[in-house]
Amino acid sequence: MSFSTLTKNELSRIPIKNNCCMKAELASLLKTNGSIQINGRKKIHLKLITENAAIARRIFTLLKTLYNSEIEVMVRKNRQLKKNNSYFIVISNSQQTIEILKDLGLIEDILSKNCLTTYKIPKKLVEKRCCKRAYIRGAFLGGGSISNPEKTYHLEFVVNSLEHAEGLSRLINSFSLNSKIVLRKENYVVYLKEGEQIVDLLNIMGAHSALLDLENIRVIKEVRNNINRIVNCETANLGKTIDASLRQIENIEYIKSTIGLNKIPKSLSDLAYVRLSHKDSSLKELGKMLDPPVGKSGVNHRFRKIENIAEDIKRERRN
Image (tube, rainbow, N blue to C red; front, side, top):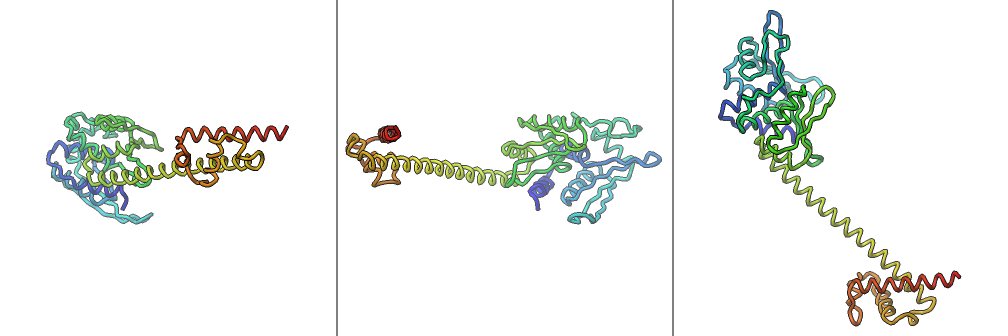
């Protein structure tokens, strides 16, 4: 089961006590996942389709609790892909459909060919903070998804109008988030891509188990990334140390085979002999072996002098 499905199942089990929050969530579900069918003689049907049984139960419960509607529930086996069940929730009674749509602020003119004449989020449904959270939750249940956080951080809501997308984005951003909108084919997508903001939105919707799972994954990924950075840094530093050591030994061996180490200052020859005896030691470790001990910068300074001497000898021999 995907992380997105687990999150929706959790949200579908959240109890709602207030009618205002029920209406906000149901209105959002209808806007993102519902359809209105107008047949002959002005018969109007309300239909919602979902492959998630938990969401289907949620919609049925909301409709029954709020409006005591006459609801038909049908289950069909999909013939394609994974052959999951599709759940059809239908209100065939035209009068009940009209009452529900009017009460939720989804229609303005029932005589219009397009009953959903407004895609705005009705202000009366999201006046309270709890109702705003319920509306966002309904939008996620109806048209949302969240990627597996093991792979990437991405949460989105798919809606079919720019007006609704902008309203939903403003509603989400009223909680100090930064959702954005993008056009994908014929739909508009409201999305968040930052892990911290997705965690905040899960908390707003009430998906606390999904939130904890995502946080655990974030911590593990952060620790893993930190370890990788440290290892990469240490590997790079080790590589630099080895390269520097090889260059130092090469210069010392060259001086030794040409003019001899006894021809350079004693402070440099002492360091040269120590380096030849301890090829894998760091500058700091080499400095402690000298008498008197020398700091890392002092050792590095002496090696630069040794390198200059080796370069001078090479130039003289070329000339």
